[in-house]
Amino acid sequence: MKRLLVLDRDYPFKDIRNKNIEIIVVALRVNLKKQLLEAGYNVVACFDEEYNKLPIADIPKNYLKHSWDSDRFLKRYAYEKRLEILGKEISFWKNVFDKYKPDAILNEVVTIEFMEVMYNEAKIKNIKYFCPCPSFFLPLTFWLKTPFDTYVPSAVWDNVLPNEFDYERARKLIADNSNRYLRPSYVPAQTPSLVKDTIRGFENFKNCLIEIIKNKIAGTFYYENSLEYVYDSLKICSNRLMHSHDSIKWDSNTEYILYPLHFEPEAVVEYWGYYFNDQTRIIGQIAHSLSTNQILIIKEHPQQIGVLLTKKYRTLKQRFCNIKFVSGDVSSFEICKKVSSVITLNGTIGMEFWMRQKPVIVLGNVFFRDFPGITKVQSVEQLQNVIRNHKYDVADLKTIELYVAKVYHYFFEMEFRAFIKNDEIAVLSDKIEEKMKEL
Image (tube, rainbow, N blue to C red; front, side, top):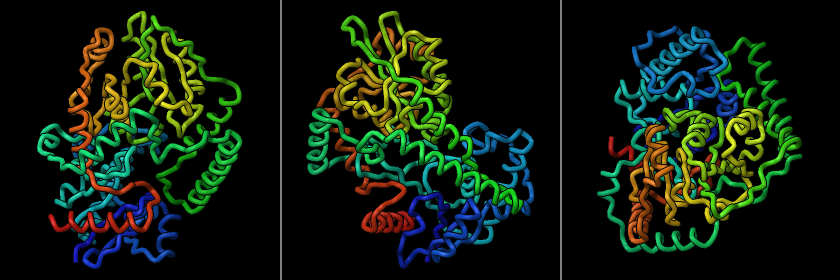
């Protein structure tokens, strides 16, 4: 029997059931460990609980692939404390791997430093890290080559040979995408109520404070302290009361370029963005690169309506006269009709626009980055040249159909999200069994 380690952070990996696979669970938080044990899961370790007793391991040079600022929870600590935490993370994962000797790990993309250390120590021990990732706008999932981004090299796509069924699904998706907005599963069907968001925000703030106090009394380390993020969500609600988005008067003599804002804080920006990991800076660089007849349209993420009304973005708008703010509840399908092109970090809205034969500029490492007709930008100088001089390509419909069919063939059918149904867990169980057989 193979042993599979899962780190439980809301995803259902622990629920995999297979007679040939033993699941062992690692928890980050003390309260989560308690809940998992009460539910009958085999929890073998908990970082917060063990933190005070862990030795501080030596940290190899260039140990982290990403900078200190990529972790959303640990930014509150000074450099010296961060060194202590990192040393203890290394000790923790060394102990877990030495004691329990898992054959593989099943986990999401790296979203926090704790996961990056898990990946690094697993690599040293030759423990395979299996990482499924959703396509976000389709009920499809695929296995990542690395848990640090969703990039799929062109050499891989070149070897994907779709069948007729893949082509049929591709043609239907392209037609549907051309005629209407295809709402991803994570986008709410209705605009979130300000009242409900505010009540939820206060409830989350209260729960977070209670958890902080409990850990403080117990003298327990608390990695996932999200008080700052919860407080920011309340500030977003208050700004929705006091400020409003722009009312855009579309002018035929002006060229409009779209930048869809990513949800923050999130790994899509903090980790997948690499050097483009600060959205206010990205927006400033784009706005600085525009010609005099170009306007940058910033659209909020539909799960974070009101974020553009917060002080940091209002301050940015005071600096640049050539940017306009659009609410997250405005359909990207309608905006697509008005803009000439889209610039995205890693958003699948890029693929939506690409299928509509709109120029797409990608700054990050998303799975469709190497598709024909996608323009990859890696520097500010290149960005300005592409935007001002229209140095981008647009794929023809036949090529678009081919690559959408390749996506259907390369991915497998499962809507991967935090809460999935039993039949989808069964699919994931079968898929991980196939991966375990490769060991």
